[in-house]
Image 1: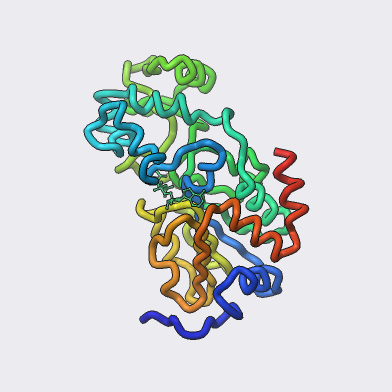
Image 2: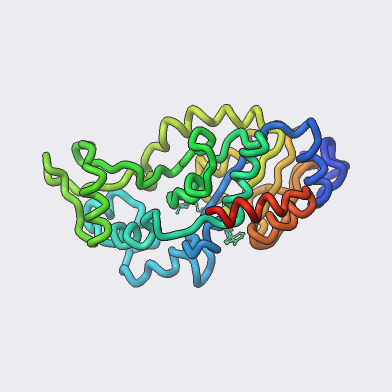
Amino acid sequence: RNRRDKPQVLEGRDISSLAKYIKSTGCKNVVLMLGAGVSTSAGIPDFRSPETGLYSNLARLNLPHPEAVFEISFFRKQPVPFYTLAHELYPGKFRPTITHSFIRLLAEKSLLHTCFTQNIDTLERRAGVPDDKIIEAHGSFAGQRCIECKQPYDDEKMKEHIFSMKIAKCEHCGGYVKPDIVFFGEELPEKFIRAIPNLRSADLLIIMGTSLTVYPFASLAQRVDESCPRVLINLDHVGDIGSRADDIVLLGKCDDVVKDLCVELGWEDELIKLWNET
Ligand code: APR
């Protein structure tokens, strides 16, 4: 049933009602769902934006289909496309964005309950978001192992291989080594599965920079109570956000919307200060 009628928790479905709610005593546990759109202004392309998205630029790697770059069966035959992508995306080259600083600001105001991210760029951590608040649902470059015997591989050696575009091979069985990034068809990290019940504690869900096309991550948006406002901050309208009485849809670049929200909250100086420190 679409309860498009009057909001239950918010006064209205606009940015000032959202700011009012965030500052109210009823808003204690903010849960975030992030996608590649929060890192595009850092210079990291997203996946599905036409023209600029990675999937339309991976054609030069002559993939059978764009997602093959994250498929084990393809990687086992041709590891070069993924290693090329890893070389381009490897953490350390990019600066966190204003949106990442906003996440840190929520944590500093003891409002951040959990930050679920699909991104592998580690920009949340680099922006100073506390590690115990971050759930990297699609893994990260933090570790790596052989895709055949699962034997872990040395961090420094892996870094060298990725930087010099050499394919790392397992020293025990000769299989290819892959960072602990979740490929299509692979299990999501235990830490993600264990954190799913966190959604029940959410007083506010903010979804930023994602097409909500990849599951099970996208299903998190259905797991908050009806009484929990859901906010979409995205260039385009995605998922079913807007169908509930307390949903708010704020279309636009996330850095711009986040700045406008912080002006409404009176947090803009703190936000800019944090960002200037990163
Ligand atoms: N501000 C707001 N929204 C933006 C911005 C921006 N600056 N830039 C892009 N977007 C939006 C796009 O319009 C799109 O709706 O962010 C969304 C990005 O969607 P995708 O490219 O599909 O990225 P994402 O949702 O993170 O992909 C999910 O797919 O390939 C897998 O594992 C990969 O984690 C990834 C998953």
